[in-house]
Length: 523
Image 1 (cartoon, rainbow, N blue to C red):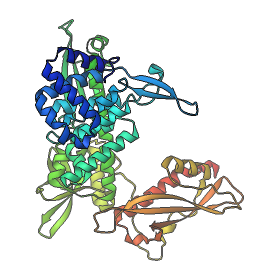
Image 2: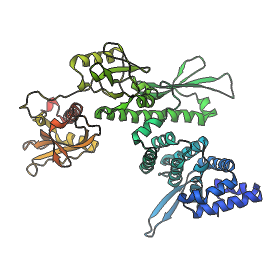
Image 3: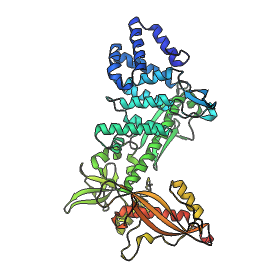
């Protein structure tokens, strides 16, 4: 049944050679059943066999086999289809071992512990890695099947929460289909827990053992015990950095070569931890910026756990200005504050008490008056705070007070380079048709934007059209015209937009103009 020509097949053969008669019978029956049974029926068909084998014994054996397969060298088989075209198939285990092993690990969730999660995660990452053409001469994923089934197995674990591991795998893998599979599984888990996916992600985001954005440790050489090196993983100016120091505390430019040779796996793991932490930080920075644009409100108790007290994210929280909705003598009121070590201070440097059920949001500067804005800009500058995204010094746009002014014509009449405009639209994934006069004398850039109607919680999709007109004598140039708003092909008025969305919409238009404008010398 099993192919003995790979590391796992030979390991199973060796296991059967040393097993007693009862073990041989149980495991033979187990292998027969997992081949003919789908994972949906495992609880009824497979679990009773596992219980007879013994849960601890079963788990220990599967763990041993996982360790062997994780270290297996990727292989490639070449074959021809019916038309004679040659194809390649990447795999870790020979046929039919890979299929059998994939079925086998789907039974691990019944007896899973934290070590099971760690091993399944490692398999999902190693099997899901892209082969490097320069080294392997072959491209593609090492073993899509094993990576996919390891993800399924992780998602099936109920007693020990695998969510942090799934998030970590999603960050590390490059395969879009595997990333989407994890996303699908996270949605299913969130549905079971009766919470939103975003809340699930925030609750289980890995912190990589950092505290206040900092992790340190030492590695001592076994060959030369006097050689001790210290390492630090630290969030500095919203970036994760791995640094090395000698025994005297002197910072080293790179990892000592002797240490690399003696502890290659440990050094690689530290390096990957820093890289993964940076990816996580970048993703959450983008999430916070999106929350900033839509003015998403967080429950304070949730925000404290998911952001302020998070070992990785807590540092960037302190680099932003926030607003808390608190009780005052005049009722509930938004107060602008800075968060530092779990405490809030306002514009007058007074402490602000926030209750567990209060709500908090990232401040948008368009909501401040001139005096408040100038104070917080000075505050950020004085403390030399590098913000994770442009917050306090962000360009803002407010509605004109003159009722006769047409907001749609704010950027009308500006000459743009059509080549720059098309290139920028292409990079952003927006639509723009090149104007060829007289065939076409008008065109537009179209893109989507999240917006809220005042006091509504859920953002909706708004379609923006920024029109441009042809210049008959200058085919490489266009002149800006009006901005139009639509929702499901229905025109909308600028009046329905809240202050933040209004400002951000015109900031996006300004960016198009700035990037696509001709140099003054070319006008």
